[in-house]
Length: 305
Image 1 (cartoon, rainbow, N blue to C red):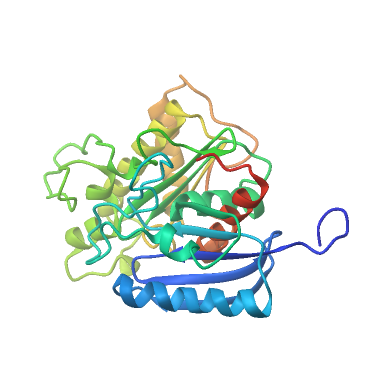
Image 2 (cartoon, helix red, strand yellow; image 1 turned 90 degrees about the vertical axis):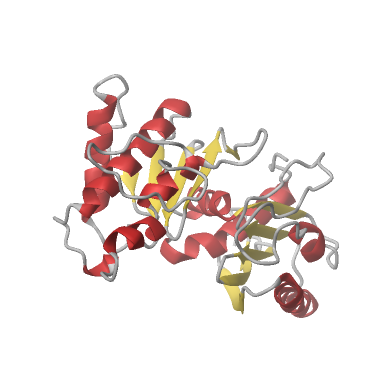
């Protein structure tokens, strides 16, 4: 129900991920009605399967807006001839695929399109740990590192969406371990992602690594530098950090915040009323609900292209 007692409209959303795509039918209030998952294979197999699910929902329930939150990089500039395309990705067959055009063509409803991490950030702002905030950063540390960055209530734009996982950071003294990133020897993703951690650990699993293991010092350092950059650049009211590397390692968030405070060194002060760096309140629902949040933006006209 909406605040005025009416039944909230239905939205459809698609979260396009590297291994799976989650289709969600939900109320604009975030109440999930139905969900379906499609394995991410090649576009010719994956996208028709998604469209079939959306068609069934449109025929049986009807929905008033569609949100697409996708892995990237994405072309989000509406003036570009490539608007709606996935850029140079490591996913075979997906580079140059116009997921926006293909998925939206069968449906005569407003359509929102953004990155999966921007969608997750919007979801946390609507229903999670950043409710009531207009400036917020959502960091996911998994296979790669992505940052959903919202400033003044809108995801950042410019020549492209946020790619803060690829900012270059100073290494800890004595660290010479190879970067996982093929583009940068010293970026956040190359040094602190799950893929980078797997290189460092060899046959060991990150889940089994004790809190006191030295490997976490590098992760804490790199993510604290990322947070320092976020604070100085856009001053988010809060930073949420999730993803497979951080989940299950409860000690990391507190250590990252302490390192951030030390790095700022009194020049900028963080809000003192609550932890500044937190876990996403929506957990693994942030991604799927992100596509619904993107659909909400499209339908209300609040979305900036």
